[in-house]
Length: 274
Image 1 (tube, rainbow, N blue to C red):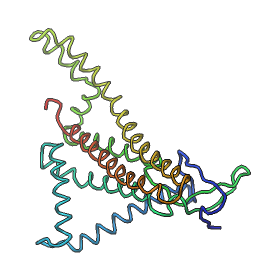
Image 2: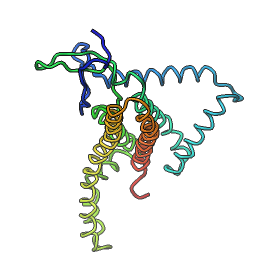
Image 3: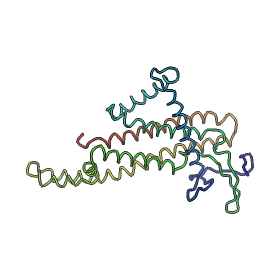
């Protein structure tokens, strides 16, 4: 029976997303539903905007073109190359929009407060139907993996598999020792250090995944807990300033995630000698 949180059943914020159903072997969680809704919104708005694009912009198209141009300039400041910016911008923009819509949807009425009561271990618990996607570590981890793994794959295509492989396991540094030792004896000390730095790069790639996922998850989840705490103290007026604060945090965290992904893409597609 569908009920709202006006009942006495309490709901505590959990680190994990609660399952609300199953589709075959796939467990559907409340954060997954929220993410699907965010994707649906992006697709619908993109199609509507695409149908109304004119050769000579006017009205709201001018606003969107101004935003896109500002985004391209931001990309240029990171990549230093307009051609790279044009290649990366669609992916970075899609990532930014998905995260910011997911973050803001967590502030909508009903998200976290509309759901069902279920029995678990002899206790009645409330399971909400919707939960902000970024408040689920699974979602932020998936986004971080897409960003880091994607940047490495693109890097392989950009600089070549052999050069990119040597960035992490520097076989080339050891092969250069016998060929260049007579010209530069210090190479016997320098090149093994280069090889060791490559191993550190592997650890760095793993750290990127942890950094991206936990930063986004921590900020959004902490915001949810803060809003619930304020609402428990006083359901009216008191949570409003914190909701405005969460709007700002939502867009800042989406921007940080997108810019860091752009930085990783830029570094991965730059040859080592550059």
